[in-house]
Length: 382
Picture 1 (cartoon, rainbow, N blue to C red):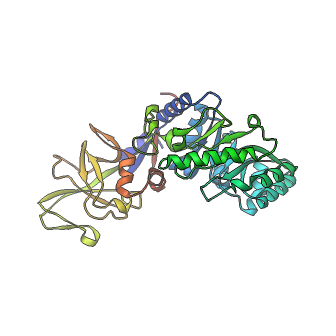
Picture 2: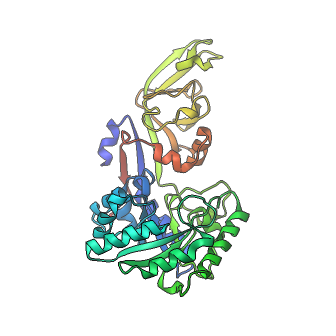
């Protein structure tokens, strides 16, 4: 959407495309030169908007995209990009043929998937590109690392599959460095169980944004999957990746819809979970959990109004959030409130907001609903 519509928006997200491109270039500069950049853009590019984000990532020079499923891959193609696409989640039986026809790379975790995709490639008249996934401790997708040889050999025998990569997924790279190291060693041992594996002919990847803290420049690794970090969000506070100095791409805003006085002793919102201790001025913001302000931040979060932090009072409702502006002079209807981002000299990070919600930044971004318009700036003409 254009900036001109922002004035009429009740709540909105600002997306800085120039910041996104700066982040990608900083991340690339921090990696060994031989590492390919897999841009993860699943869940509508983490809530930032797939068409605009994908276009800017192409301009920034990423090597390929990764999405969750076939529908996301098709949406990515509709943006006009013909960059390679890796499907990270399993394909359902009815999706194999369409994935084969469109040339998407599929993740293979089992013999059954390999056989189905081989049949789809035969029917489509072209081989299906696949990445073999190895389970080294995530317990989700992938063939168990001690049992990889049989699936590796099966893929090699199937004429309508083209193996392009081998990868794993770390379970706790932002919380458990010791187990991440163990998973990395399990992955390397699993690769050694694959007869004739040539790392130079395949993408070998294990690291996501959090895993980059422990990436090993030597050895077979030649690709990384970057999601959260390219949007300027560190996987955890105090991260070693802070030295990369990425910047947030998204900020989240709402309007003041009403300003009113309430006496001491009055209760606020559903369930009467907050009672005013003083005569107060409250502002009713035009955003609630229907927009992506989680109910879990009730009585916990703060927002910026006129550059000052104002506490959320009572429960967040579907369409409104009540905040205390008693100590902020001159607050008026239509003033801008910042839930995530900067205003004046104040700032509220996505990590802080997520902590109030008892969740992680990934979920906070994905929770900003479609009823919230996204406004893009920092275009290629900046």
